[in-house]
Length: 124
Length: 112
Image (cartoon, rainbow over all chains, first blue to last red; front, side):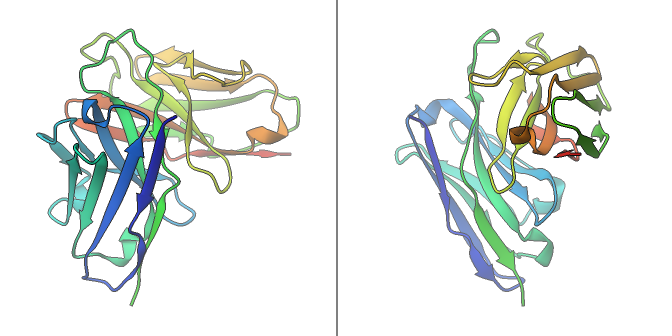
């Protein structure tokens, strides 16, 4: 079955960097667009970044542009989020989530899959 | 921008519940689908999609959950709230160009 497992979270000082990883299994990773979504403590869901199936196109929420970078290794079924110049307001649980296949059938059914999340705490 | 209301919804067990989601722009996409989704997040759990393309239930979702709407106005209804329905519900718009998700603020459903 589909598995999505994030790792790499932890406590980090403001201004420092951290790299999150998301290892998936149970589906053809290289065919799917992928996302990172975060949730600050007690707050709602916020989309952070997305990447096309082949890594050729990326998109970011304005608050992380220039600081975060999403990438993927299709040979190892792994999605990454490189976070730099971290700020206190980046503190959140970060979820990795599967979208549809990039070349999807508009009449098809594509369940989403989310991981359990990894907590990033930015604090001095 | 996705705007949900109410943000808090106390409901008695067995009673219906309704959540509204309004988009600042039409959600009809180039593939002629409306990519409006509803997610449930139970306490301490990851989000789980309940509804996709406005009204289609995901596999395993009880039929007491239903979605409706068109254009910019959408609704999630729970016909008879059960204890396991406690949590926060989010509407979400998905676009493919650019690839992005936009969530509503969330509606907290609790038992009255």
